[in-house]
Length: 111
Image 1 (cartoon, helix red, strand yellow):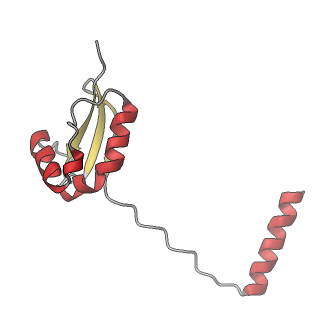
Image 2 (tube, helix red, strand yellow):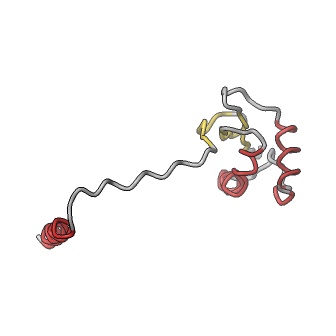
C-alpha cells in the first residue's frame, strides 16, 4: 500500500477548513499551485509544496497546517504567519566597548 502525505488546512480557531474550497481559492490566487494537495508521494514533496505556496494559502484564509501521513498526524499545527524578526539588541556601549568585546571573544576562541 502506498503512503499518502497530505496537509490539513486550518483556520485561526484550529478548525479544519474544507480542502476543496482552499484548493480552489489557492488556484485562483496562484495558478502555479496546480498540484493537487491530496497526493504527495513523499514527506519531502509535501514540505517542498508548502514551502512554495504558504503565502497564497495564508492569503486564502489558511492560518496553520498539519502534516498527515495516511491520515495520522505527523506534526503540526504549524503556523503560516511570517515570523516577526527579532529586533536588534539595544547598543548601550560605545565603539571602544565593542572592540573590547571582540577582543575577548577572539581570546576565548584561541584558548
